[in-house]
Length: 137
Image 1: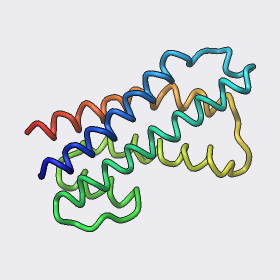
Image 2 (image 1 turned 90 degrees about the vertical axis):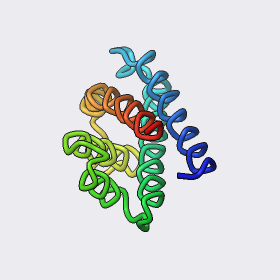
Image 3 (image 1 turned 180 degrees about the vertical axis):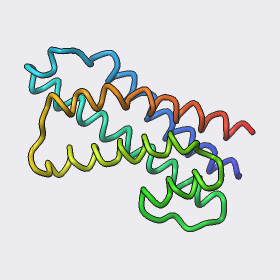
């Protein structure tokens, strides 16, 4: 992998880490009553998941395969043993939540969305650590 791709991957991973840190430091019961904070958490989560999707696409392209949709890129990385299957499922779940938050499919149940973010944010951090380890190899 060339130095330019590694640099871009590192920038995307840094974005994920920054967004995760913001979410973890502000995620509390108050977000259900504080619309501004809740929307900020949603936005940070969306940006973290978008950066994860970009990383998956970049890694796939770095392995001489054309990037496709987010779910196919995740499957590709699982098939190549770059991601564990469980992590792949968590990333798909995060992507689905991101889509629901952006497009507000059937409205948003804030309590459920906040719970899901709380459950998934650690997986986004773990993904970042895994990518850093993969880059170093």
